[in-house]
View 1 (cartoon, rainbow, N blue to C red):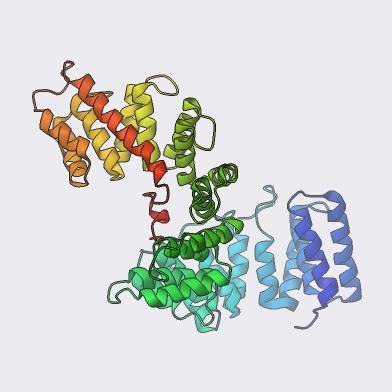
View 2 (spheres, helix red, strand yellow):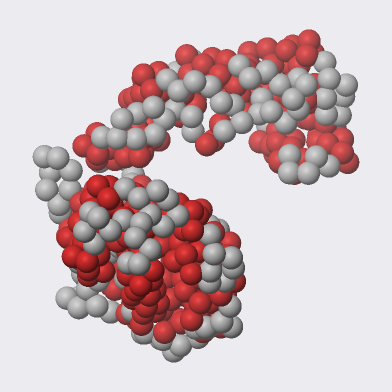
Length: 468
């Protein structure tokens, strides 16, 4: 492209990136200086013009001057075309609220897209779908416009168009419906699948989609390739496959651990949790309780709900950490707030018994109900018991029996016991409630504490053999 001076033109951008994190005034002045030097050497250097436009708009190195910013923008686009427009679009992130125009990013992306720049078209498609790339520029979602521009990008040879269409249909995000058939169709059209893209396609082969049955052999091959290309989720999936005995015909805990460790080193919190649990018990490796706690705490710091739950259990029984009922309750609260249903049940049991803090029966029912609504069998059993006998909430025998029957069907023996012992006349009967409710609480607590003997089969969906 005319007017392109690589080294001189790139330097203002490189210096600019060092300004954004901490707005260093000295670097700001230096970056302005390099932009001016670039223009002195080559008056047609559109990259330097982009920098000048942005600095005048943001008031960096100069007093803010929107008129001059517009003049530099026009010059940059005249010489740099679509590429300059893309750079200008990203220069309009809201770093300075006084001069920020929320429509300019869209304006420049449209301009570049209408000039048939396939990268701009892919970016514009993402923009209309509310991509995190543009989280500072929220606009109403427009999936029709998003698909239009992503398809144009793909037709022009930009593989990112197919990837984003597949991803949006895969997750049902950006205003798109969740459509795994469409997702699979678009992923399969990507010319060069790599890493995380292979992982997403592999999950669709694993589970199958309407009209296409599962193909686990193809899925496992893609998981392997994606894992070797350093996709953390694929590395985690390889750990799950080895742990579940899908590779080699039988479980291989050592290989599972090695893959979890690779994914954990790529900062994938679920893998940190699984590596920590394996280190705690020493299955497939030498036990390392101290290292296990560090891994679980690192995962918990990222909000990984399974790590929050297991740290609560460990604190409650004194495994790998000092026993502390109050600390356990704190971990369970964090897990419950993160949506982990087992943490909700454990927290509810603690609130019911006054373990690790005050007894709070209404709050105990609140968390039990949330766990039941998630479908967790222990939650169904415990919430049904509390609701039937009116503990922390007015009794509702009809709804209670619905939960208790569901829990019983899932194999929860305490549910069956409550259904057998409690007739419609007994809700709220103080002569019956304490021993039976407390017996159910004791049974659930004992059973859930005993999970530490088999910590590799957590119930949350993304820790199953493969993510859903």
